[in-house]
Length: 271
Ligand SMILES: [Zn+2]
Image 1 (cartoon, rainbow, N blue to C red):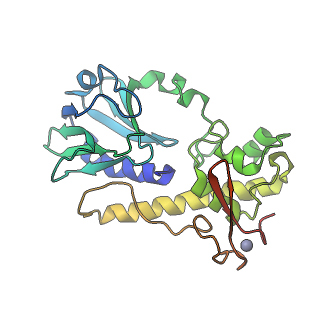
Image 2: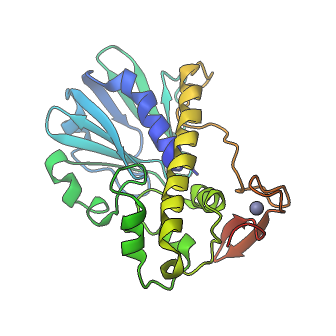
């Protein structure tokens, strides 16, 4: 499932194809993904010039000179393909630029989404309205986290996954950040010491930045045969590494499952 680093890598890969270009056509090859496409999507995008691309949490944002923002979410299996040689049945949306370059949004499980909103109203639109700060942004720091989690009895891991507290973190990077910060995933959030919040925030930024750097290096040689953006194999610290050695202390990484979600952690050094 694409997490924040995959979305960031995707946006960086789309930028050289789209930024400053006019959208010659947009073909909707079905009526919906997770939900129906907006009825005016094609009309609002056709002929518009892309003025910039960005990301908020796990959403990609494509701004146009008409004051609109195309908002995409990759769901479970979505990805953009650059100049695909053939268009298959899982390519649901195809955009062509004035340079004749083509992008297809391919999503075989169709949990992704595509919306268009007025750029000026974006921050007031759900889900953005209730989102916490970006994990890589300056306002996400130890003081913020200590303040938000003061008195909370929920596990620290659940709090980091709460998009209202910090936006865009998923299971993989939360597991890895908690391991790097040596904090037990089940620890009561309100009982984490202040200095450890600083360490936790630093760990979140470190694991995300490392993954984005890794994704960026795959873009540089993105002669990937299928032109797929945003997917790369990361070397995770604990995620998916049950039974292997903890990178901090050499202890054995364990896996716990609650409500269908796996938690990977080292019981020896994470307290
Ligand atoms: Zn350990």
